[in-house]
Image (cartoon, rainbow, N blue to C red):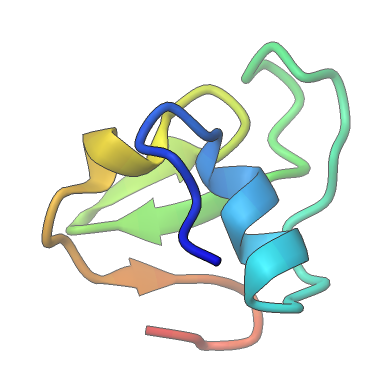
Length: 65
């Protein structure tokens, strides 16, 4: 199943890809528990959607790209 484009990136990483590095913290993008590198920038994955990622590379604590 493909996630809709408005799905938070955090949910795709954890639920669809089974990664456990990014955590759900505050849900507002403030605490950093969900942080990952998207493209060349640090991003709060709970605050950006799948469509925001585009074709950028994603790197989590697990090193997933």
